Length: 88
Image (cartoon, rainbow, N blue to C red; front, top):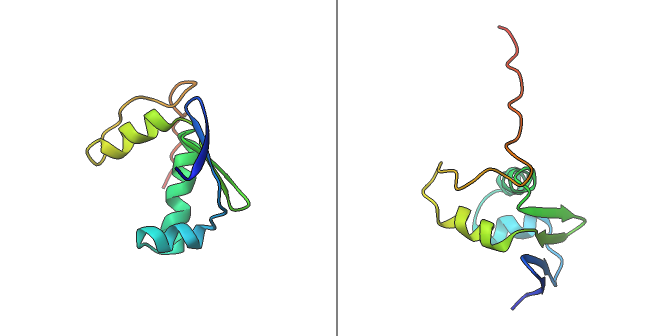
């Protein structure tokens, strides 16, 4: 295992930059940054200064195994509000 576990949380033991994550999964840094941002918004991970904490491992696994675009359940605390659409 590469992390310290506490309940459903896992803190990765080694530092990872957004570029490191991008290199590991074969995408651009920008794409990795967007994906990590979405995972944070969904309260699945917390990222700060090369430190990644998986906040809810069972839910992250379920999201990873779900078909693309499927929602397995809303984030803890309810769904995120939808931002208003600016008029054209």
